[in-house]
Amino acid sequence: MNKLPRYYEFFNHTKIISGYKALENIPYELELLRSFRPMIITDKGVKKAGLVNTVINACGDSDLVFPVVFDNVPQDSSTKVVSQAAKLYREKRCDSIIAIGGGSVIDTAKGTNILVSYNSDDLRKFMGADIIKRPLNPFIAIPTTAGTGSEVTIAAVIRDEEKGIKMPFTSKYLLPNVAVLDPRMTITLPPHISAATAMDALTHAIESYICLQKNPLSDAYATAAIRLISNYILKVIEKKPSKEARLAMANAATMAGIAFSNSMVGMVHSLGHALGGVARIPHGVAMNIFLPWGLKENFSVRKEIIGELLLPFSGAEKYSNTPPEKRATEFIREIRKLQDILYEKVKMPRTLQEADVDKELLPDIAKNAINDGSLIVNPIDLDYEDALRILKQAYFNSVEI
Amino acid sequence: MAKIYSKEIRPKPKRFKKVVLTVMFFVLGRAFVFTNKFDSSVKKEISEWPEGYKIIFYTAYHGPSMGLIKRNNRIIRAKIPLDNADLSIIFKNVDSAFLMMTAQMGIPVAFAEHRFILKGESHLAMSLIRCLNVVQTYLFPRIIAKRLIRKLPKIPWYRRYFYRLRIYLLTVPLGI
Image 1 (cartoon, each protein chain N blue to C red):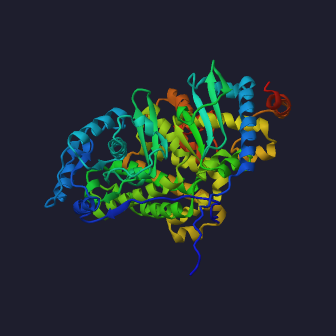
Image 2: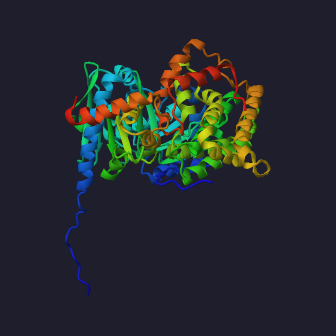
Image 3: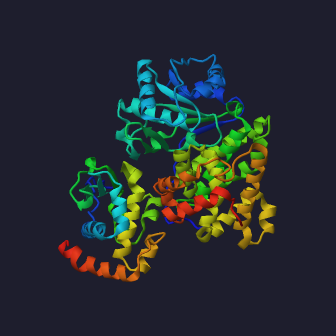
């Protein structure tokens, strides 16, 4: 039975506008924020796919002017890119930011917004929790992938190019004022990317539900996200997914983002961040590989809580037909079944071997994983030997139940 | 008409908790420095920190604090201004620090309950937590340590007892 935590905090002030013709409301939302010259921050892929034009065209017949489109965002946001964007923002006398893209674009926009709002050139000064103490300039986020949830998180991660480290920033003021979820923005996603981002969102929801910072409000968002993902993940990886499926996944990713922004993620993300950093494996693929392992490792202390997730994931009938003591195992089995389907349909790797990870890299991945901050709220702790053992098991095998 | 009192009300300072915190920071600081001298796992962690790395445990507002700095591959206690630290562990109030420093709450739970924030270069925070796990394992009996630490470091019982006695009899009072 879910107990109320002794103490918890929950915060999310982002206005979410979702659905048909949502983009067309951007001029109205910016007017409410007294902004008329937004800078667009995006990446080359998004621009090439025509999504920037879709947004600009949707804002037709308004008082908005777009002084500049900054499309220089790389796969991993960095201090150099943020400084370039901030310089352009000032030069072009912009008064707000619209981020169109995935996690890296939205994180770059958050970093840029810190610099331009504080009129600073040194992002390092703002690194850490709650260093930003006042509202930043108006900021609208338009996600083009349904996974990261960055449009509703209080965090940004930006690489310090000089020191070669990833700098975390957390502050309630980093939350965008508005997040726009429009099915037109995920139309260009190929099925294997849709599958990977969906597994990322699913992992956000599951880890936020089982980790130490869970609370009743984040639980509500997490279970709602799991329900939507379970219902729509196979529909969104079809060749021509419906608008309904795309919008459902965008909503699920946002809900999962709100959940984990308020209750954090755990060891699946620690391993995934390390795998991404060392072996350059896409984050969603890493989440897919490690999710069952995370559940299995936490099983001994979170069995009942993991079992509760069978209800949103598999529905009331399956849940009620499964004895309480078998629900956690059954949930992991259901995740495994989903992985097999995703492998069959889009060749989404289930093991490190299927992801072509060099076995020699496992010690480095283990070392990085135990230094990842996500581990702090994971129900069980991992040392180097634990991390290496899991990686070795995840190399060849899927979880056996 | 009701009389309106306009006298300012200032909440009372929490002197007792501040005194206890000062003592606990002193004990933890000395125990940390000593553990760094003999425990190989702590030595290994510290060896990977950059020389001159500065950590501060600070209690808002203007409460007790403890500074640690790496010099010559060793940890020493030092007075570090809050703005000068590479990594700051800032307790939001005296009561939050009191809960953690009096072994009523472990680091993961304190973090999950937002009792403190991390400021600065936090990529070594997990390494610091692993060191603190070892220090707490030497400081507290197993029954208390189990409540604070998710996975107890593997230290033989005779070693724990010997160094616990050593820490409380020599290290804390005499600094040796």
